[in-house]
Image (cartoon, rainbow, N blue to C red; front, side, top):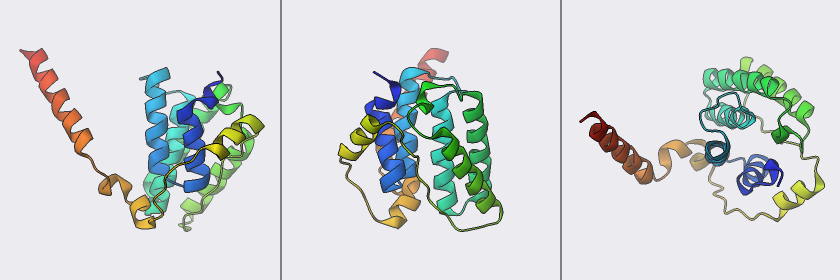
Length: 169
């Protein structure tokens, strides 16, 4: 199976292009990246994770964070440009959109979403067929990292602290 047909990647494209839930885009690709190439920072998936992070920051009005992460995303995209993760969408158009976004950010323009143009009809079909429950509350989408249920994350942190404590003994 081509890596862009993985369920997490299909869901990422759906979220990025249709629901504009960039926080969820980040979560989906981070989990996928951990499956295929954990700890390898110069990876195509990390470039796309940073893209989603940048869009999230921009919409929240954090222009400094948005510009920094967008630039880092573009650098990683260039380093990994031959990756199969970039084969089924218009890579050049995405770079143009990212460049335009940076220009808008640096001139303190309001957030403007753009989409990732999918060039593979089968992949586009999978994205179209995927049904995702959406929360159309813009306030929630903008501040999702603060408003979501974090109990699972906090429990995992506690388990990790205990594990590290046991290793020190």
